[in-house]
Image (tube, rainbow, N blue to C red; front, side, top):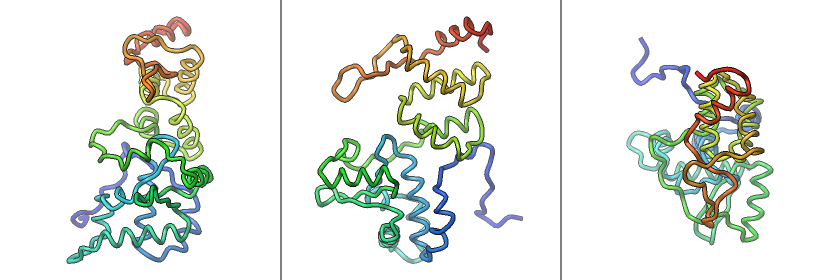
Length: 248
């Protein structure tokens, strides 16, 4: 019999988070501190959940993370916050994470990638992106819209590491509504492949989408590059005409 609280295993609906290979090699070999290990792994998950080009996580978000609090709070010990801070200091010292102080008060952390190194350089020159200047994100609700990796795994299947980077680029290029609708069309047409989904997205980019409702607007209130619709019928009919196959 499995012990109480034992992990039940990875089911067919389990989602996966891309992890850089060095984490499983030299970084894992060098880390000796449990707090650093847990903060590093949880940090990778937190960075992955961020939207937009700059995936920064604030110190407040790390300190409020329930998983880290539970994982670093030992029986009779209320020092989880200090353990999280300690783990972050070690991760920055090892250069797994980058850090920056906004306006001398708000501290944010980024993964030490080429793009985030350039982002920190811009931050040091006073260029503060809107997603950071607005302050820490509110706690994500339980029914958070799925990111592109979840969409792929829910609608197509297991995600390979080779495809992860291409999906990440697509997530930054297309609106969430486009991604959800394109995956939905692929499922309805029984064409469960990223190649088919990407083809739909490229077609919409080249030919545009018919606007039957609200126009997706930028922060300046002007219509953005992409229009939004929650109707799939038109595109299913297009595929029927092109391929001579009735939609399912």
